[in-house]
Length: 437
Image 1 (tube, rainbow, N blue to C red):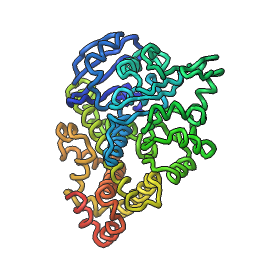
Image 2: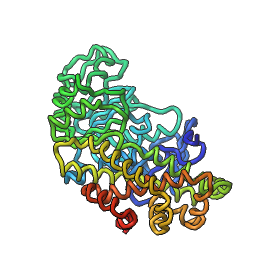
Image 3: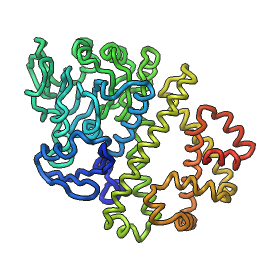
Image 4: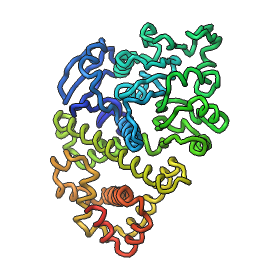
């Protein structure tokens, strides 16, 4: 009910700078964008050059969903001993989209290919970061600007822009594009485009937009041939790849491929924590403690962003370790396997909820992990426990405790899960104390 974002934390408004400061970009429905840093207005302008001057090369992470996507990506890259700054990236979705704009703001390497509702925008040397980020900052004001707003004079010798509605376009190498829409639709999988992708040495792909099953069993082989240098796929957009395509990629390549269900849940998590949880815990004090208190609100934004980043990293790291243990199972499949294991343990915890509720040490440890630090600090654990013990909130509390406890257990003991479950079945309390120790 609250994710219309009139209250709570809009999913794509806030981010963190490299120096740890929290920033927000505001301007929905306006022709200007306001930049705030740690709750203070810095600039309110329609000139994105001014916003770029303040934060253009300082954005570490931006947007709740993109925070989970990029934390997953960076974990996979670090685990593989690669460097983000050295990886040339392709994205679908562009600077006018929520995921695409936030991705552009924070990616540290070169972005060589953007496919969005405006055009195919390509530069083997890397698109100009400043120009891309200025377009991305426009997303927070009206009108949003897609890839067509990129200045073509900034393209290198081999770069090009082919508008979706363009016709009869000659590319720098002499290739004639009769129909921009057809070129756009088939760019990722048309073998004729291999020469461009090869020149750009694209090693990372983060889809931030696109249609369901854009890459499917019918075209995945050509996709792999076109992107022969690809090392990492982290799915920002939902269902961009079909399961059949994912299986083919795992069988026929060494690409580290993380599935959408593990990568992009930062926005959903933000809603559940920053809107639903806070509404229950604060009750009638919600307005005074959050909406009318900038310091508390911005502390909550920082806390939730850090939690999204940490949980995404923990999940990605566990999935990578599980895949390392059993290479026969595709990396993306462990997203489903881990969820099934967590739900199975949650069922056991629900069946023993009365025993769990007697263990105050475990309950407080789990709630401390789940609840943003600013809320624990301002409300106090005793009052939180009392509030959650209200008859109308007990089911909600029990769901938090069982799901969060199961998740904590899995991300700590997932690589020896059968052993942990055996220990749990022998003595639940002893097993759970090992989770929080």
